[in-house]
Length: 172
Image 1 (cartoon, one colour):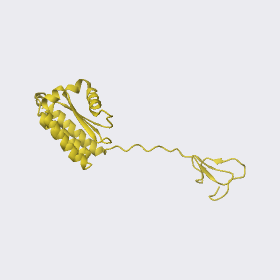
Image 2 (tube, rainbow, N blue to C red):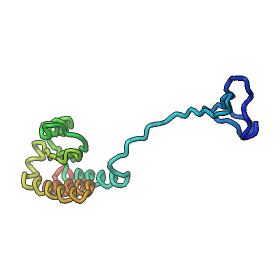
Image 3 (spheres, rainbow, N blue to C red):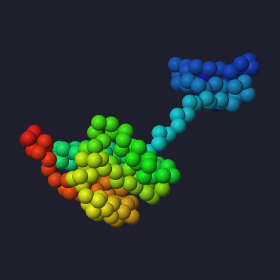
Image 4 (cartoon, rainbow, N blue to C red):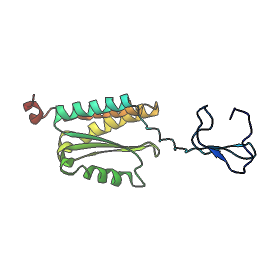
């Protein structure tokens, strides 16, 4: 069938692809000549808040911080619910055996809130004042819509406050 020609008046739709480049999958020319097209529509995947290179920078900052201090650094980005502190502490507890040596930065951009939670050992090495300074640094970056830079800066500040550990020094 050449383009522009009417389908045969059989009352049945013509389906399938022809050798001459006719109808494609999901297309049918109706008896009236109207082309009916069925397409599967895939929903768009939600856009991630960070690019791959930004995530790599954050991952590198956390890896360097962990190696140099012997502590575990974690970042959570998402809704923290009504009681942001309680939710952040639960997320920190979910780190399991690593929780005592862990520092968690939990950020809820939609709520414009964040929490820094430190485990027992991490708290001993990272004073509250250092957490406050890291928080102020994040606020300054977040105001400029530089979330990734704020997180990286905070991780580095917390690691600097913790200092190096004897465990990590023995591994080098």
